[in-house]
Length: 477
Image (cartoon, rainbow, N blue to C red; front, top):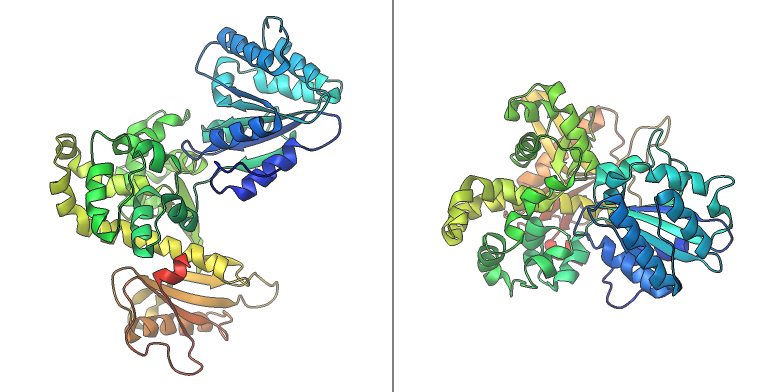
């Protein structure tokens, strides 16, 4: 089934949903679709239900009795016939399976966590009806449970949860990648696209609903766009970063979680550094770190050259922007002095927001650009002789081959606003030599310079050079 024209991108997700929803044969099936708010889950699932003549039930924060009446109304629309009043979900779920028997039909329960909050037993009821002897055995319903509370959705299929082992589909709707985001925003200038992505990332709703389609007209308009659309207290995007945490039910102490995010956004990327920043012991922030990971607001990555060390980064660019630029000037921004705040913050934006963000984009590029890549990340190479450490921004490793040294395909450095020259290549070459001494296979290692500001004349131009140059045009090409 072809994807509707009004749904941008999401080809892989659409294909997966259609495949699940149209699966032939008797027996109800269960799928789980999750993802943070504003990613277009509801939009996608509404389109699926509409295209396939299915049922789409958007749950509300209401009591069980009200939810059951609304669900009965949806079944009346689907069947075109009267539906009895349901006493509880023990009545409703078997009735649903009983009326969906002739063809494969997607049945979407959107914002499922609202239903679970009012009726904690609902997952167990679905599990029973899907099991042996349940009413789902003769049904052709393709049930899709969807929700934005990541901690709740993640728990549906984990551990001893009733639905564990029942789902035939587990899909996470993620933000658009940086190239898709540029197309979605209609931005063809790579430098402008990178800066916009460093602020709003790939969340679809931020363009249409939150800034009402306001897109920078060009590089010269970027500063004015930030002032009128991001730092403007009258625009919904202004407070969005504060609300992202409020959607997670496991968060009991928002101030602690905001402090953890602030620590990471400020460059404290280890658990010890985060604990020191927020004034807590390391064991006291272990749970907040886990919840923020489960909520897809933090990402934990390991140092590729020091496997026992890991670091955190903020997954949502808007949170990084908020913590780096907006928090310290919140009172002035609420008074409408966005232009003054931005003038004083722009340098910090380039160094603390755009610079690290472009490093992440370069790692994403490297993962897809090299078909031989097994793992892409960053890492620190100790240099004892010089009593320093060399930060490798983009490291590309081949898949591990048991019994053989790990092959390093590429070592890269990223400079957003600086032309790169021989000194950057020399640092990468030194890192390669040190890694060779540690037992890595570096015979084919390429030294890659990623720059948003160009390169010194002749860099990497020698015949047979092991230096590879990547520009913003390459990133977005």
